[in-house]
Image (cartoon, rainbow over all chains, first blue to last red; front, side, top):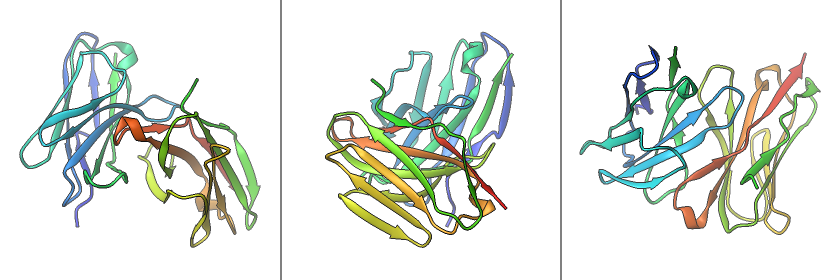
Length: 112
Length: 112
């Protein structure tokens, strides 16, 4: 039973560039949430996707956008990268009927 | 006011002792409470969930919830060096759907 997978593992970008991160949920899960975790902080909720729609959004600017595909996988896009966007980006999957979320290994984004 | 607060530590306990980790949350209708373990450079790993007042035990771990005091704790019995990690408390708040609020985490070191 495959767990949550994310790609790429690491990414280095420069300010102003755009980045796309990918996530495949745990088998059987239909809901994907994205989190940003800065060094020394707890994960901060970005948004959640269910049935290919953004169901909830945290306090993040419109530069952060996402998408969910029919197979439940998801993408996180960040435009006009800032130095402060450097963080570990975590994808968590769950069932819409459950509150329990399982995290993927994360993507470490460094913005120079 | 932050939604979830944890003592950042570091907390050090000798091997074999009981480690006690605490978490308080803001005065809202919170439904579900979770403890995650995060090793340095890795993603959060689910340890336990608790939904009702009282204690819930799973192996060496016991979660305790007191909704009246807005307090949730995690006890680790017979602490092992492999328990050395950051422990994250997460709260799901009823009127935000399936959005998790995380504390900043407590760093635990178990000394051999």
